[in-house]
Amino acid sequence: MRTVTLDILNDRALDLLKDLELLKIIRLRKDSNIQDITGSNLISKYKGSMKKQPISDVDDQLNSIRNEWE
Image 1 (cartoon, rainbow, N blue to C red):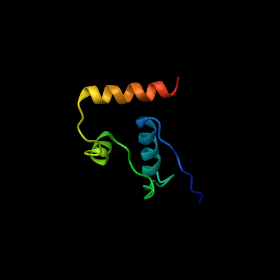
Image 2 (cartoon, one colour):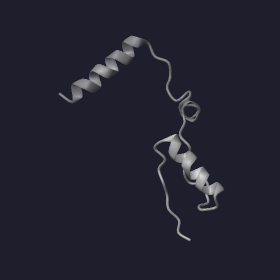
Image 3 (cartoon, rainbow, N blue to C red):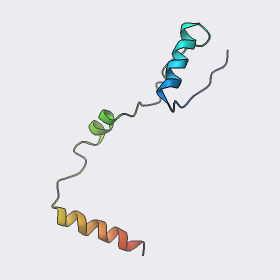
């Protein structure tokens, strides 16, 4: 038996892998070290990490950052 790690780029690939598992050709298992990155996970992860600021302050900060590169 050999273990490999895959990056699933398309949901159809996951469906194919599940079919192979049903045929008892492979065994799928979730890696405990890898986090599933979805929109809801990202929202909860970063929610509240930025304080509310007036738009003018944000614009000033963006212009300052852009000017650093020039």
